[in-house]
Amino acid sequence: MSVTELDATIGSTLITRVTDNTDVTIRSLYSIQPIVLIFFRRFGCQLCRSYALKLSNELHPILKKNNVGFVGVGLEKFGLEEFQAGNFFSGDLYVDQGKKAYQILGLPYLGWIKGITDLFTQSSKAWMDETKKMGVQGNLRGDGFQLGATYIVGPKDGKVWLAHPQKDYGDHPSIDSIIQALRDNIREFRE
Image (cartoon, rainbow, N blue to C red; front, top):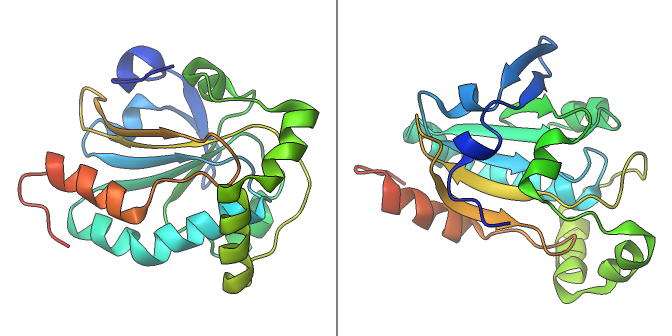
């Protein structure tokens, strides 16, 4: 599914803010500022944790300079406490119980056979090597076959500046591609 604007697809979808357990619409996240929006596979996933940590360390300071929100969404609460305790993600966290947004966006669900074979793709192996170098560990609790995505969403109308649904477990956009999408859409972007 090609998504060019979130407002029409998932803008009114409710997700739960982790800090106070309040339900908010996805639209409210980008209503006043652009956001980098990551749909994590699982909070316990090693690869998701290392991706979150890399973005937090290398990208989040740039986002702050440019008043760009940094938002992570998980599909369930399994592994959330460890995720928070490990300080893997420096942005705002939400949970999409029931995977409503994941389903509306058409994010792939792999199932057993594809889920196992995806462990052996080139990008999954490369990201696993990176994860090991970072010393990040995870757990196997929860739904391990749902893929996630990374979006950059413009303010007010929810226009998508970058859409990167995962093709396999290790498939993430580079930080350079995220910065380029922001640079292309923010007039006085600062690095």
